[in-house]
Length: 180
Length: 162
Image (tube, rainbow over all chains, first blue to last red; front, side, top):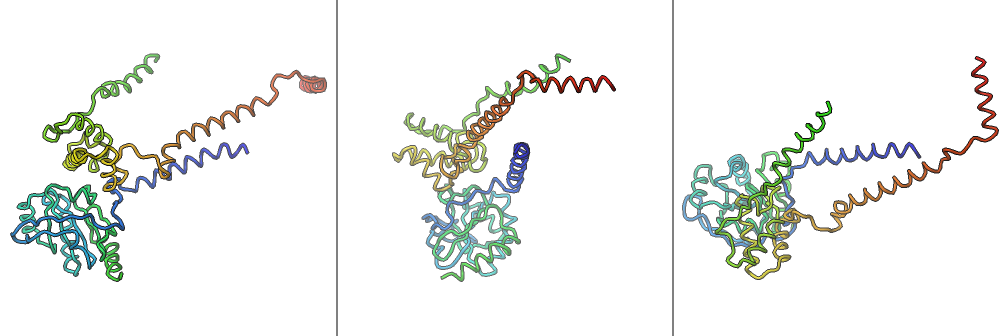
């Protein structure tokens, strides 16, 4: 009995250290999305205008019928050029990638795409940032994986690395394509 | 040597004393403010309880981040639409989750957080009381009995013979 009294705090302490240890491996910047398994919020955004890679914008209903990626980017975003080749590759592999230029001047977004190339099927401008708030965006880049029904199934915070695409998102896209 | 401890304490306390009175400056810009002072006051008090999701340890009232500004404008827009404080907070919670609230709500998932310290206090206090009671049960200053005195005498004699 007496021994337990002395061992218990030690066990409690080790458990606490364990919790803290696990906590250290988690990125506090990554917030769970409130949209998982819920439909995309309604939006209808203008495009970044009639320049190379411009064209009309799109509404949330555009992401229906086929699983797609909805990528939030900006010309002022430091990590976006790092993600860009991966998006180009995703697009080349035959997946629909939609882009929302967040809090960006259409002119800047156009120049950015002229410089890096345009992997997007359509680009919408969210200059005021209201659609981003409806989506629960906390920064750029962020990517939503949307299924055939227009529901969000996965959210990537930060740039998609080639490993994440191959290991996580591509298999998910294949699974979503196979869904009825 | 006697001076060392107060000196050490002062060194620890001084930065705290210097830092404490400096209240964080609000980041609200004049162009964001509502004309109605009552609504603006409500917006300010709500903003103080909403976390800036970019900078995370600041409220949107304190943060200069562009997204914090956007959220301040959303709060004001909702209030102008005639929404209640709770509805306005809920508007943001449905988008960003409970993480936007600087004060987590009391719900089953956060019971451990809210009640844990009290449970530890009560549990620890109870354990302390039990332990203390057990300890005092032992008779400490009862006088020695006849046989015990005899044993002591015998043992002392043994000791003396050696």
